[in-house]
Image (tube, rainbow, N blue to C red; front, side):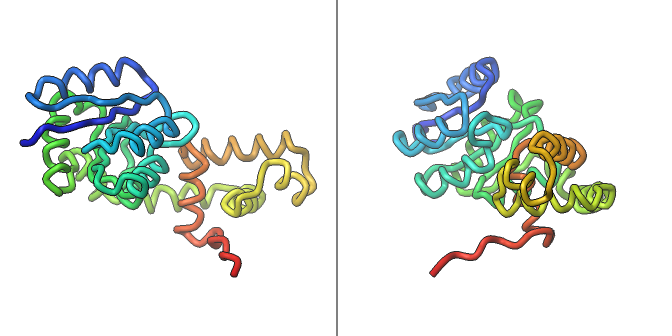
Length: 218
């Protein structure tokens, strides 16, 4: 395989080092940049235009799913590989919908990272057998619908307002509650639905008809 230029983004230096060590074991493969948050990952990918960007999901400032979407727009020739600890079909599907070319669990880093990079560079989608099993299990829809059914009417109101882009302050004013109460509801919702970023909550709300996408002004 040709020489490859690779960007590694993860907020844990130890993970970046581990990925770098595995990648540098291949002749001609070079990590040309590292990032500790999603915004930095997008900026470096835009500037460096690497062959592959390896992204964690749970990063500060911009999560890996949104970073993948922005990188695929700013650097369309860059392949995106998600390297994460999150094992849910929702996360996998969200990453693929954002333009990721592959999804790899950190537990499989040593055994599968090289193969994952090779596959995505050859234009193939890469999912480890474990990730395929997660997706085929189809647990997301039934689990999330069950969890949504346990949310209160007030929490469902707040999900809708968050998906519409309202801030905690705006939600508090609209519902006649304190800002602190709105923040507490938001935290409880994220915990109950097992989301790790607002972007995930918004995508979920739009996908399941809880909120409508904002209309563009003409």
